Image (cartoon, rainbow, N blue to C red; front, side, top):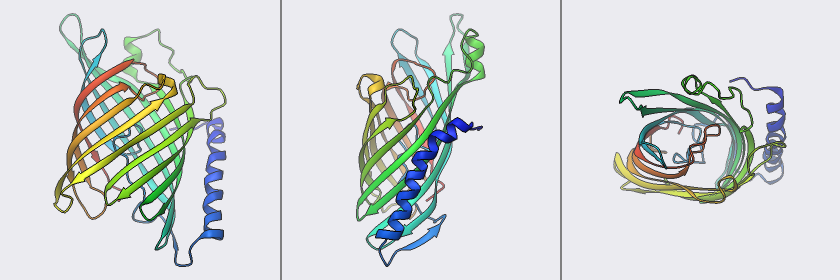
Length: 291
């Protein structure tokens, strides 16, 4: 992924703010029993795996229904990670500074008028993020900034040859603040975000919420249910909802593998292709390498 100087300039100020807050917390308010480490083994902020734009390893295949169009098969492949770079751990207060990156690829399979099927790569989205997370007891607060850019796939460009190939109007940078209550591997969260790109062709404000509830966590294989809700000014504040029910393959920290059935209703989060409001149902899996 090639990041131009303007992109780096856009994300540099929020990253500087995060670094300043981090250093200030260490110098002025860090508890005497805290220890500072680089690249710690465990994260304190869990993967919000139902967030379509989470930096994670995840794939899914869905039956996609659009108003006025035939049913199609829609698949996603996400390759990414969020890595804790520096962290402070204390008995009551802990914090960490994370770096994340990901590529989100979208594929579809449609049935043509002659009865044949056509598959192809529709779009790739690239994300670069940084965040500061602070935890006290069961309460977590995350300040995050990220850049998201979108690039049409070769197959999409071949189908629609009159499409603008390098449309950057949908790219943006956003900062958001999220509160999370975490109890074991169960959590709920709520927050708000704002697009700070100076010239942007999107409405700027957004709200997010959701949670995950696990069952029989003491077993090697357990169950969970979860929901992720996005309310964007870009979508006239009409909720985009993603729900899931599935199984965990557990380890001591976060589950290593999650497999689930999900239903999604709303607009797809990817920034170039506008499918309108859709409904999908299918299966997905996420692999969590970083604990």
